[in-house]
Length: 183
Image 1 (tube, rainbow, N blue to C red):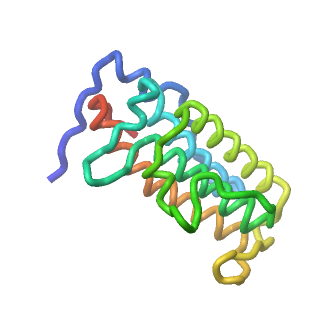
Image 2: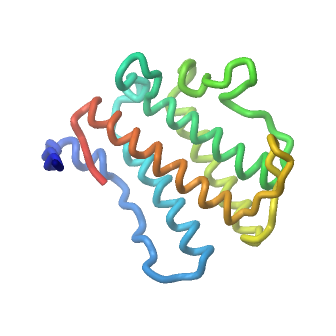
């Protein structure tokens, strides 16, 4: 049975939904559709994290889970870098919140400034957009773990799925923090 959406208190509504997402295209070429859907997902994460005191972004959802909005920001910063810069563009840049010795540090170690993490995420998103703008969808990078080629088209679809999955988590985390639910 579907639960009706909780009415968001007026003071929370504008904070949760500040900054409208662009309307998604109903028609368009493949690049426009893929990049629009990815940017829509990125904006959704940003909206889920807006209007909350920075320290609350590190609130854990439901222990023993270490998931938090701060951790999701860090995780998706790493995903942007991993897929677009390292694997597709072949850039020699270090991972930010990951190491082989501590692969879960994006969620487990929330040391550092949340606002700095959000700014770094936005910067990685822009670097990803720049890479995509200069490349053909059929162009390939190399998956680091397998050595196999992966097309930009596939990477865009993978990132849309990654954000969609984690935006579902973000929705639940946000509801736990202040009761706000939304789109």
